[in-house]
Image 1: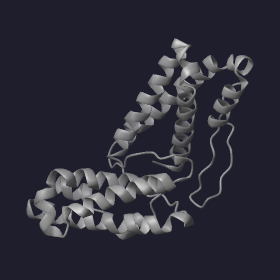
Image 2: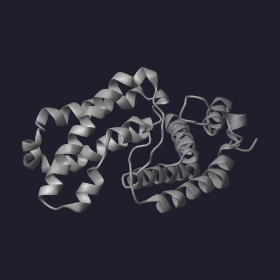
Image 3: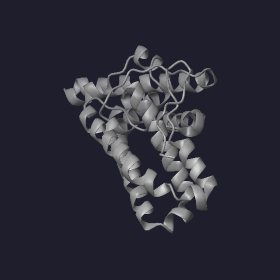
Length: 229
C-alpha cells in the first residue's frame, strides 16, 4: 500500500475500534450496526488482498528494534527454506512469493513486515515436513509466530494492517473507495445525533475519523478528513 492508504487504514481501524468498543450502544441502532458490519467486512477484504500485494515503505521505530531483528532473521530463514524447496520442485509461483532479501525487510513499514512474516509462515505450514531438511525445525515455526505476535503488540495503538501482497492493488483501491463512501454517506450521518445523546461516544468517533499523517520517519499531521459537524 502507498503512504496515503497506510494513513487511511489506520483511520479505518481506529473508527472500527470505537464502534466495536461501543457495541452495546450501536446494537440499539440496527442501521448503524449493519453499516458497522459492512465496514468490518470491507476491512477483512483489504486484509486478504494485501496478502498478494508487495509494498516497500520505511517506518522503523527505535523501541521495536530488537523484536524487528528477530523477526527479520526468522523471515530470512523461512524464505531460504521455501526457496530451496521451490527450486527443487520447480515451483515458480512459490519461489516468487517467498523471495525476500534483507534490504526488503529493513525498509519495510511495521505493518508490512508483520504481513510478510505471516505470509511466509502460512506458506511454510503445509510444507513443514518437506522443508525441515532445509534447516527449519518445528521450534522455528513457534518462534516466528511468537515474535510476530510480540511485534504486533509493540506497534503503537495496535494499528496493524494485516497482509502483504503483490497483485491486488486494483481490488484494494476499489475497497478503499467503498469504505470512504460508506463512512461519509452513511456512518458519519448516522452518528450525528450522538453528539447530543452520547457526546463522549461521538467525540471518540470524530477523533478516530481524523487521519494522522504517516511519513515513515515518525512525523505526522492531522488532515481535514473527519465526520461532518
